[in-house]
Image 1 (cartoon, helix red, strand yellow):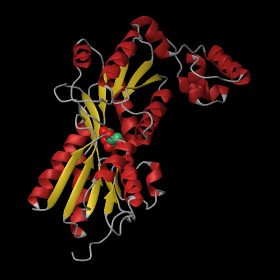
Image 2 (cartoon, rainbow, N blue to C red):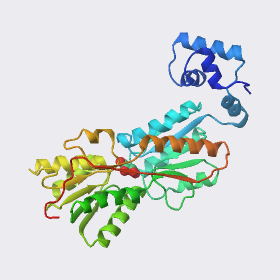
Image 3 (tube, rainbow, N blue to C red):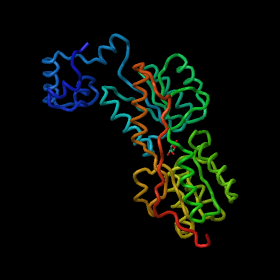
Image 4 (tube, rainbow, N blue to C red):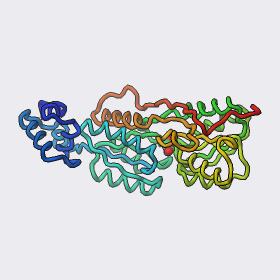
Length: 331
Ligand code: RIB
């Protein structure tokens, strides 16, 4: 077992910790010059990577799996970034798998990751249940649910307070005089779409306002095709995420409507492009990078057998008001 840390090797070699990690794990190209510097520092310090020693001794691989539903959605890309930065700094590698919101694919990917003896799994599920995952957790697989909890499976999680996010948005829209709502939501089988739906319907009914709700998919195409079919315009169209909102706005403008003059439109996530969209999108910000980082931190604590103060982490969303919503004249 090394008597020195990866940080001391990096300092002695005059390189970053991630460079040392790349040399130790052969996980990415490193210049010959840097490699020699790191190897010299390791030799002089007599460093032996602790996680490598543990791997040899305890059969750990220093590898974390991550299954997510849509690699093309910047929401998940930002989450992955937060997780990977943290894991790399701790000397772990990440194997990223895209289930394409398809549960059969998700199950196949889980089998592949299990076969690679991952030390733990970050998991953003496609749907409401996954029997294979439940079985693997019962046999000791370390898992942290990220962004979406799977009902009936007792596991640690990092999510945002979706109820708070939806109510912040509705406080604002109702306060601006919107009385007739359409909600074009994401995939019905997902935790996030369902909790936003339940919060939305409860609040709108309490306020005795008019609404229609549609489960679709968390995609541009779903928003575009649903907006094309709308027969009449409400005061505001809420969208399950920013990608749906982009599709809705494009479809409305192709039909000759103006946003927000003819109808307000809102999103959810606040992915980086939303501030540059035309019009810039009013939405609910999710702390994506922090969600990924916190989930990776929680998973490593579980792998190391540390006592957890809380099984789950619930982060706070923020309302971001931009130009895709308006004040209703006859408030
Ligand atoms: O953009 C993808 C959506 O599904 C996000 O709102 C996130 O919460 C995920 O569950």
